[in-house]
Length: 267
Image (cartoon, rainbow, N blue to C red; front, top):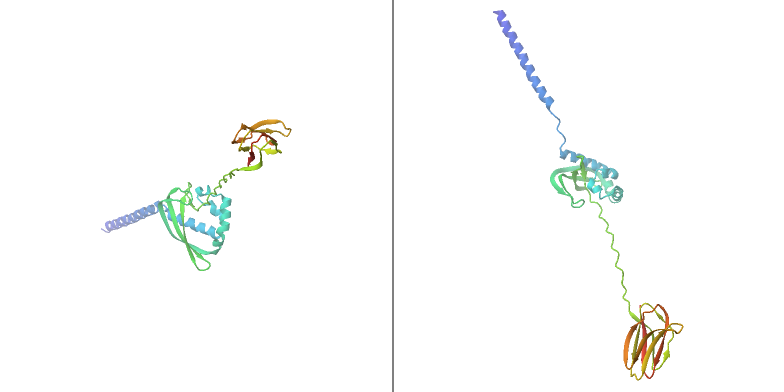
């Protein structure tokens, strides 16, 4: 009897030990199967902004440019970006004592209306607060979109393209006919020389005519080169002198015919 009780007792101990070992093995297997959760977009966006603000406070404009969205970089050369930020952001950067990220919201879509005009998907809208050395605070926000490599990139407004002013329309000066020479009489006359340009005309008129009236134009040697008027009686006309520019004179034949002659040139 004692021998039977001893065998039963040993069997119970063996079963108990086996059961405990099995349970422990399952638990350990489940723990080993667990995979560390990857950081969320909100977490990585917070990390990005903290790094950005750290660089901003230390005025590392060249490093900040590296994380600028490539679509903005295409519109904003690095040299100009650094020059602009040194001129306009340095004073504010020096006034920041500390900063904190307040909130990150993931937007389905967002349009960069001030820069690229492009709509981006899964954009992080980050709000943050800068505590300034004068005891005040300044709230601000940024939008982040992921580049092709999956990293966050920030946006800023690139400088406006400077339009080259159109060349002013040439000023057209309207020329006017100006009297340069004039003669009058009622008989024959040889005039002094006068200048003929590309725009020269002769106005002549006779009044109370009783005889002939003729105007010959001649060069400086006295050689006739054209006839301006040849008539009898009362009349008037305008004749344009189509001659090579130079000096000329009139030879006027008239008998008992009052006349007036003026030369005009466009000036």
